[in-house]
Amino acid sequence: MTCAFISRGLILFAIGCIIRMALDLLQVEAKFSTLWLVPVSGLAAACIGLLYPYVTSNSMDDSDPPDGAMIIRCIAVFVGVYQASTKIYFSSYFELFMTLIALAVGMWWLFDRSKSGLTFCLLLAFILASVTQFLYKYKYTRHLVGSEFLYPRAWAIYFTVCVLFGTIGRWVQQLEYQ
Image 1 (cartoon, rainbow, N blue to C red):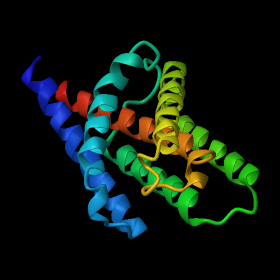
Image 2 (cartoon, rainbow, N blue to C red):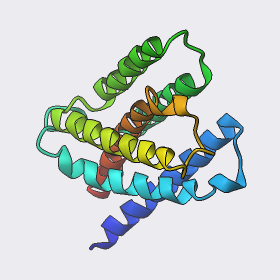
Image 3 (cartoon, rainbow, N blue to C red):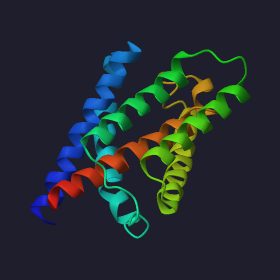
Image 4 (cartoon, rainbow, N blue to C red):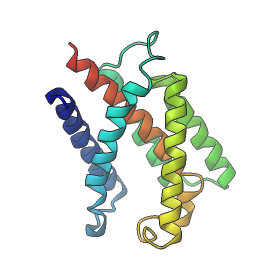
């Protein structure tokens, strides 16, 4: 492992931790029982950000490389999707589900547009939503999320997290080569 690879991982870890703490502050859920989520979020951000550039390297030839402004826009869209999924009241799960599908796919379309990126994000979102549902079923995470989070919201949050940290990972990798 090179020094650049480790430094990219540390940068992604720090960004993941900062975004997780910011989301906790926005949700006014600064509980001591959820402090373990900060390093877990940082680790997940580092893993996604380091893997994503290699997964999408073949299909990213014709797209613009990410820049600082694109990263800020991507973070803003992610926070918007997160807030919409948790704060806005929808009259039915179908309406919520369709809105989150449109927002998540729209985020992918704005910031990635690669088929391999879409496949990677969908696969990762499915796996993480399944793990969350398993943990919820066996009462490991019931104090953290309600059951209404699991069905229409979890996969959209995980999908947009994958797009966000994949874009940040491509940006950090690009900075290494400049």
